[in-house]
Image (cartoon, rainbow, N blue to C red; front, top):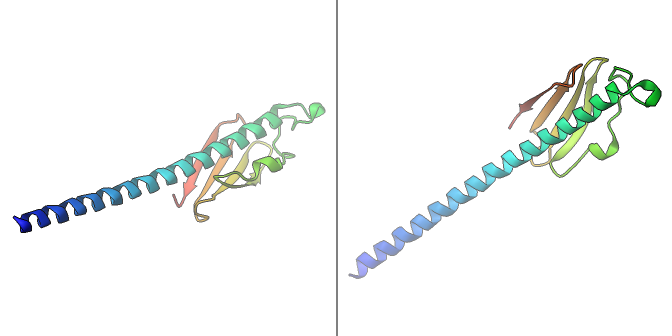
Length: 125
């Protein structure tokens, strides 16, 4: 009877260890996805800000139908998800680059076109 109880105790401990390992793995995966979503959201906010600048007349401090004089506001250069910078800028498109705060090898690039349509690409996630 003693060996059977010991075997059940070891089996129970093994099941608990497996459950803890799966829980840690799930939390890590959720944390990564949450960071990716946060970086993407910030990049899209920046592209919206840039498009608003583009469509505002130059007499009102806007770009007058061009992205060329757009500068990234300092409050948009970093948040808890990552750091952001202005990429390639032309009169009809603008690019933003986001680097993850979790892992600096993870980057995302958001490109907005002449109509404000954005495309986000990820590298390393």
